[in-house]
Image 1 (cartoon, rainbow over the protein chains, first blue to last red):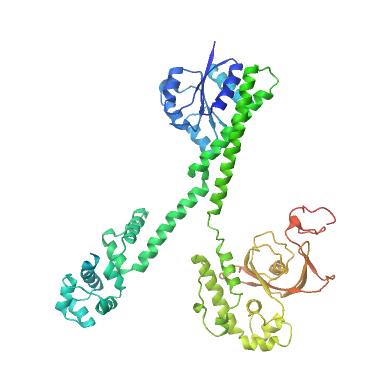
Image 2 (tube, helix red, strand yellow; image 1 turned 135 degrees about the horizontal axis):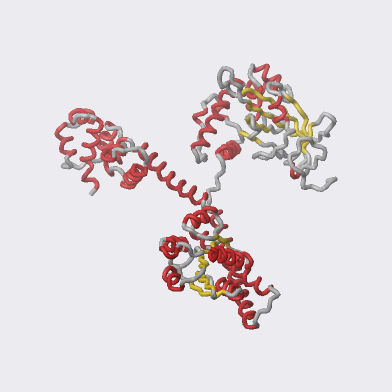
Length: 126
Length: 430
């Protein structure tokens, strides 16, 4: 069974590195670099997991997450959020918006892989 | 055009002052009917008559000719709108501003200051949220760092990577490294600039010390018998600093009265000042003697005199330095200074020879004394203050009786010290 991750990140080199890592792990990786239409892209792609950057052009990751959780069929979709601001306020905001996991830049590859594995394992157990 | 309304303003001001037309006319020596023409803007007015009318109405002539500044009115409007839980009488705003132009100015200025301070507080307390430029720069730096970290880790991974991928990642790495260099440079430039733009003024106490230092800690006006209120507090920017300076000057005025300069000079001609002897002769307490000696004009005493005053917590409230003295202004002072010993033995006059250790080696003669500062109430412990008079000693050698004090613990060479707060960073045998 193929696993699909959607990576919403405007930094092409981060996207490329993560795409490489996850592809090697057996994931099918799609990337998208804009915030404005991210919600439609998520709905269209129907991924098993979303990696979402907070600071995106067009629309913030926080707003995208809030809109996503308002949709009935997107309530349980695992979302890993990436941010450059590790402040507790951001974390709190993300948790209130319904984030599954939160990660601050610069993260290590191992952290990303562990987070993706954990989130996927949790989601498939349900 | 504005001139045309001078008459209306006079009418308005007269009504505010509760004066009848006839009454005002009589005061300025014109007929009531002429004043009536003026008030209805049917006669031009200027010169002496305008000044007289303004005088009778107790306003500046410009208030009558120019009215009240529109900016003042709008500032007051904003202040009223921003006030929480207060209902300002907006309908009488112009009357208020006209009647109390000074107070209105103060209110408008306060409001502007509050707004700007609130902005500063918000910015400082959460710069990443409120400073979009900083947040964007940080995001740029951290994102690039994240990309570099991920890419470098992939390349460092012993697992096989296609030559094609390898090339691509090497290229990305190079790109990102360049970007990181640029964005971190931009960030540093930004931080540097925003630091210099900050208000360089320090705490009110320091502002007062700068003011006193500029005056040589001495006020001939007070010695000449004038009151503290004749001294110009120009150069002090905050009202807190002005209050503190005013307090110090009033104290100095009282000290100067208790120990008049001429009598003091006569006594001091006998030799080195002995604070206890001076206190007895002038029937004053030791702190008065200390303050008075520290505030004498230059040349009266042969050696410079420094003064330190602290409160019960050891926080320094006043510091007049002497050459060679290395006593930190904020915390971290050596507890062996007689100033602090005095706090442990209130009301006991202390005299010590002090050797300052370390790089800034120097010898001082110190007199210290702690006294209850104000009585709080029945059955309540007073709070104490301590003062220390410091005079440099030249060519003196420390002996067994000498008190050894250090700079802050971190750079203190003293080996066997029971009061050490943290280890010294100096190597043994310094």
